Length: 291
Image 1: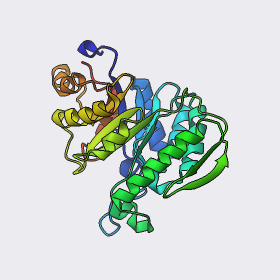
Image 2: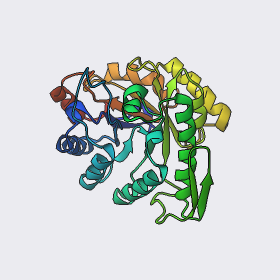
Image 3: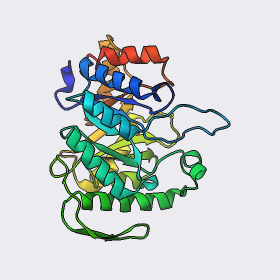
Image 4: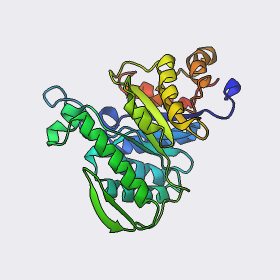
């Protein structure tokens, strides 16, 4: 299947937690279908609201509970909230939840994180902090706390936004040395990618989403990350996009520019902006692109 790609690129599904997918039974069914079809991973957006209430009201599911249900019905796929906005979560609770899900899934969890969007709906509707600079500070402190608590050793923290007394969280993550962390960030900003360089993977999107990320955009992102890390050894590079089943030539043309730049995960966008739900589910059942 992988052809010229070799064994480095993996293929996953990436879908929203609202709209057609705002139903837990549907999500679990699709996840089981995805694993049966040979996809390597399954990621879910983490939103509480997306659209202003006067514009659109849609059903939502909680992505963490959904991933827990999916973990109980699958055995192989990696599972990832992509991305969880840590500035609207208590980091110590995320630390506990992630370890529990990591053990339940037998070490299949990846923690995807970011500052969250859109700020006017996702944050201001709930009287939460919407300033991007402050949320970035909260994200950095949250990551310090989560990774500190995951060590299973006595840990305390004094930051601008969070303070915790010395405590020890057990058990440690099932994965060693810890649960992998993928950091999302918006192009053309630089700070998110300097942050991403400190962790295990990067998932760039365009700050003017749904404007797509281009291969040239990724060049800029990876230049920033290399300047921070020196190399991309054991580092995951994640790109979301769309392919077509049974069109080997077209899919080669779509994926080759990303493969040559070192992309390690291709996440197939399965959302209502592409097609109707039945067509999307057929895309999932068709499996990863034949290259």
